[in-house]
Image (cartoon, rainbow, N blue to C red; front, side, top):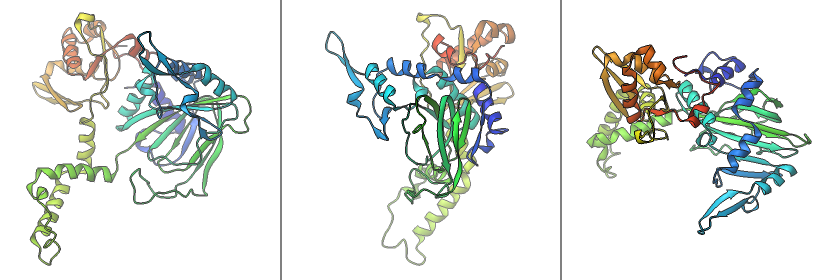
Length: 403
């Protein structure tokens, strides 16, 4: 999938691919004002907030460095039958923003098609899971105090400006679950300055950072943070621990009375079995299995009673694998394996490209069998019907597969 935002981030940071992700601080500018406004605007973010029932901690508001109690900006929308749904009180939220506040909406990709598609494109690019959080700050409001994240982040400034400070790490490759709490910031300042509209920044895992508009006066800042969680050696060992249950020796009780004695056969046998397990399943095997085992994402189910299948798009978290085997071809994705006739390969390459596929135009390009193949992929949930709402997430950002 070729997404304009992904390409613009690479160019802005001077990257030639995903290999630089997590390796060092980087900063640049997207250089395309139209792309920046297309991704998200402050008013569109507020419109998203207005139209959904949100709850803390997914949606939060801060003033003067403290979280505002939800009762101040939430209200219950009560139906004539007494059904109560919590909704953001936009009038109250507007007052907070006018005074100066920061609002945060986590996992914006679950609500907004543009962000959903951007995160999927970044997942196909990085081969890791990605989510995006949005931060709108007004006037003199401060942001979070100095902190570090347990994942790599790519920050895109979409409107206004905000002052940042980025420091080095206090602990090499800190983790969410770790042997050290890592609570003391380093004094090493990697970069400090102002992020302005169109700027992009990569902060690797563990780097301390903070952002604020304190002292900036009247104005605004909107940025989104794409959080990219990479697999670690600890992830691989946890995966191996699940596999060990297949072998009987790991399912037996540990004999605490004899396992540590010299010549204790049970302890030696366990160590030998663990060595074999490590040798049989490499880190590369784990990474491949992680991608293919990813659960199917949310999608609108296709029902022919609701309309014909006119256009589809592949919505798997990671790129499906095509394995050609002479007269057949296997498609592996999201814990599934499908086998089709080899003649379906041209259609599959279009349908699994990650780009929207209008089926009538695709049939003229690769043959009418593309419709039948599309129906199979939609039924197996590797592709989804391209609703107008989902299509809006691609418009102007990803060209269709038969362009």
